[in-house]
Amino acid sequence: MTSYKNILTIKHWNEDDRPREKLLNKGKVVLSNTELIAILIGSGSRNESAVELSKRILISVNNNLNELAKLSVDDLIKFKGIGEAKSISIITALELGRRRILEEALEKPKITGSKSVFNVMQPILGELQHEEFWIIYLNNANKIQLKTQMSKGGITGTIVDTRLVFKKAIELSATGIILCHNHPSGTLKPSASDLNLTKKIKNGGEVLDIKVLDHLIITEKDYFSFADENMI
Image (cartoon, rainbow, N blue to C red; front, side, top):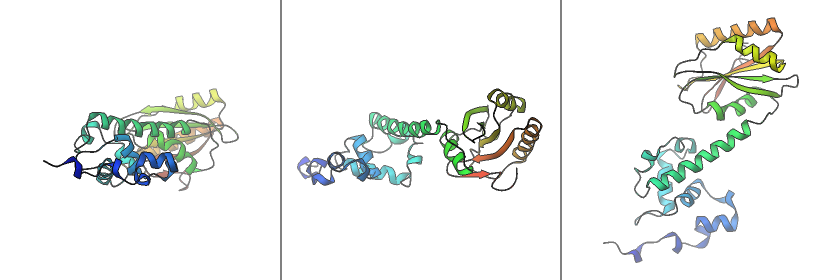
């Protein structure tokens, strides 16, 4: 049986190397992702410190926090030293981080280009496993008046009623709209239905003098802009 006296626990480390003390003394920004997760889980196992365990978990997802956030309780408890309670702590912390980003996205910034649209919509659409179609309604100053989901579908597509798109635009006195939808597959190439729908909505906007400024296809890490590609 291994003697506890031979185990180098976090308490025996140099104070500068202990995650909690490091946070207290130097601030949160100096901590690595591994150290932050170690604080969440509190302790490791007899043969592995919390920091070492955290490092092993991160390596399994290529040190990608977005990938870590996709792991379920069942996925996490496969790591020796991680039980249900520690799994829930990790999942809860990452979900709070996601919601913080989402709250920032729910503010009403000015749209200055496709990148700003992506920054607003990626937290909403980027990680979904099904397709959703959203409309951003803008005023004369290109400030967001409203972001709204127009349809929700399966893995391969959604159906959008263009009449509802412009009904809401008229109610808001919007002068411009931006179309957004995600591709759960990760592909950025517009489909034939994407092209047809964009054309249909653009033609409707011309009749009502409401500009369709762009259509973005959004994935977890990237986007395709119809306007940037001169396709709208």
